[in-house]
Image (cartoon, rainbow, N blue to C red; front, side, top):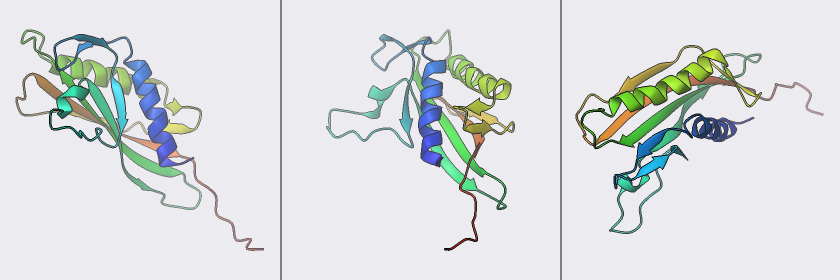
Length: 157
């Protein structure tokens, strides 16, 4: 197992968890679900394009990893970043971000195993943006996963 395997599995799991959420894209149209990306949003290549075309989205970033001893698995830090668009000033998009965060954190606090390979650490944190960026809203979850690693061998033959 590799951190990239974890990243792919985590994206698939979050897309499934959020598949029934009705949100808006940047054009104000209804969409269901949230598209996940690895590490960053895709680059825009046309001068007419901008990154608002990706709303709603989430990004799974692999931040760091460590393995303190020979017998312990990798402990891989991930950050899940969310971006949504909400033009309705009554609903205030931070509530939607909190709903997304709650769905994901509850899933891993209740059932920490992902794809029968990766186990979520119970020390999870989240944050919301602190600036007004209406109609765009952002939030994040930091969660670490135990990722199996290859054992050491002293046999060089």
